[in-house]
Image (cartoon, rainbow, N blue to C red):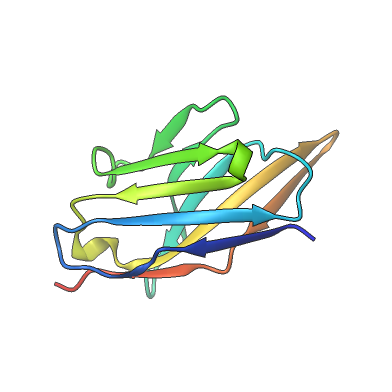
Length: 119
């Protein structure tokens, strides 16, 4: 069974940094894209950053220049380096990966890790 397990969340003061990690296990394949999403209380889940199997990266406008996504396929791990954190970055952060099969796209989600930036 494929599992994604996030770690690295916590409480950090505004302007500080955190590094989230997401380790995959149980997979014998390389994920196509891997992403970080976040969901703040009362808000919809939103895409924060994506990294493709070819290492192309896409960021939400709100985190451009502050967050960096990276992946290590050998370790089956994706990271999110978050700098210059703001109170509006407070959310549960979820790791996501997908796998493309003929005619089918399979999605995998982690359980989430809380990031809190007090105002």
